[in-house]
Amino acid sequence: MDDGQPQTASATEFGAAVVDFPGRGRKRDVTFDRRELMAILNVYGRMVAAGEWRDYAIDHLPDRAVFSVFRRTAEAPLHRIVKDPKLAARQGAWSVTDGHGRILKRGHDIERVLAVLEKKPRLVDG
Image (tube, rainbow, N blue to C red; front, side, top):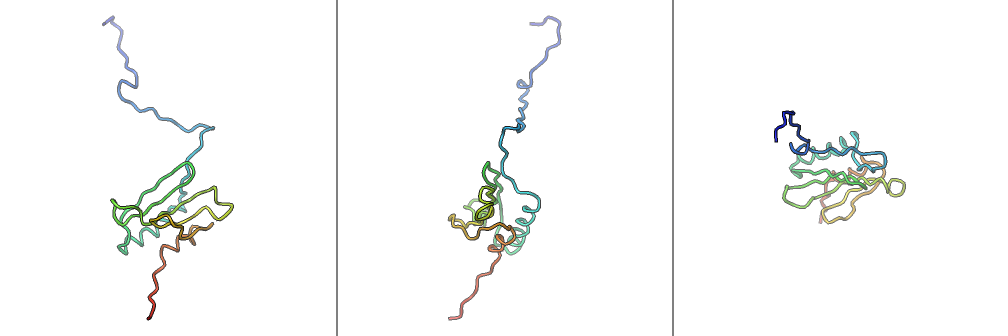
């Protein structure tokens, strides 16, 4: 029906997305800060250069942040680097797990926890 008035369309008619900004009462996801991410990416870069790792994924969840590393994209992660702030006062917010979920190292200092990923296996003379 044309009554001579200009037609206006709502934002939903054009498929515009509604952006939900976190409010005061809403809990934010756990994230890595710049220093933490740089430490992780330094180890990741060395392992990529060595041909050990090829891909990664970052998950920011409500209770923890996870950096997963892969040998191939289609496989399960080789290792997970986890930041869990709830454990910061006890055994440390940082942990590194293997592909089966076993904790390889846990602690308060990210640099010391990441060192477990760079240790070379020792050959035993027999």
